Length: 125
Image (cartoon, rainbow, N blue to C red; front, side, top):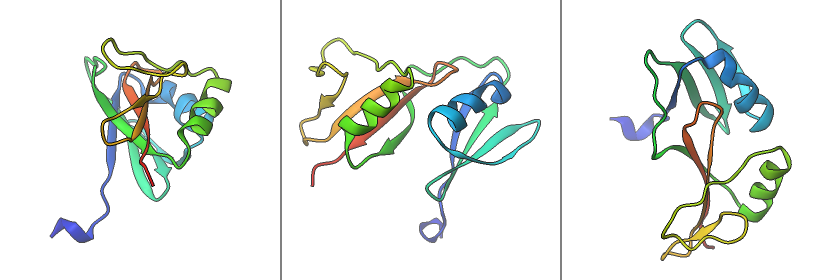
């Protein structure tokens, strides 16, 4: 039944109004709507709802990620805007924080303005 429906993504935050500059301004996502409950954004045809959650605590694992065609370019662009990429003990990451997985996918992680972990992934051709 759901295989023909678009998926939506949800990111919890303490205050979705204060998350808007990060998601709209820094990541470049287009705002679809904003109300007292959530900020709705367009991410290449997929709705990302950044919603206010009472007693919010950021997740230590990845809550959302984007597949990018060129991770070096995407990381460089975000670094120029002030994004700091995360480093994880036990993972061999390059000087920009990019890890190459056993499948040869390249992954980099960063925090949103609320402390959630987000990621970029470039899959091998």
